[in-house]
Length: 328
Ligand code: GTR
Image: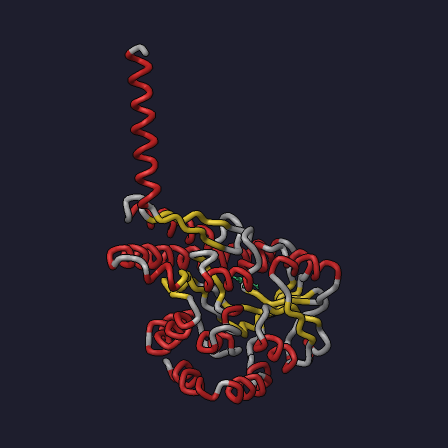
């Protein structure tokens, strides 16, 4: 063997050895996200992955799978709870049926605005929600902005609850949302996010409800051009990690992961504000007919039975609901 060959063999050996040692020590996680490239949550999760690697000197690695490629949201929630997937960004909406404490955020009109959401989540109510999530396998690392959701449909503007009577409206899988649509006199259709565009297009449903960025990024505005500013739900989004994975981390790793999550949330929230405006402008330019609902009291009054049923089913959550309502 000549010198050059010998030299290159030993270089290869060293590289292989180093490679093995790094991968033996590194934790490699898989992350789920439903949104496409460029969406604030997608950028936020990529930033989270980058910060994790940076702050841990490469020991904490997260490979993100965007656009729901690893499955629907209800399935992914189960996966993260059971440890099949380690990390995800979820809406609290579809988590509600599993974690009753987290379901209070899905009571229509419970929040005044996004800042109210942050005040609640940073206080005692937030602690109770986090404890409920942890009991069901999900540790909350940070909160992302999910904006306010409004109705849109392919038929006509909704100005009063009477306009929604008889309308087939897609909702996320959560009994609170089917109750909400029934209370308005509509027909709720729970359905996975990825199926909504086609269902609106073919008339399987007349309408749906979401925030401006999702209304735009999914193309729903192309097939449901009447947008009515009901702002009936303001649902926070969680950056969650499986409880077993989290509990095995060292104190130093827990600190790193929390910091990275919080930093990514600040970025997501900033991008969210920008995207809300940009999405609204884009859909309006695309021919959307939007109406405001300056007085929402008729919609709020219609939600009384939804609250009554929720409290009858979950008497233990009365304090939490009141705590949120009383948070200034
Ligand atoms: C979006 C949310 C998604 C998903 C979706 C839906 O606003 O970010 O996680 O919940 O709504 O309506 O299914």
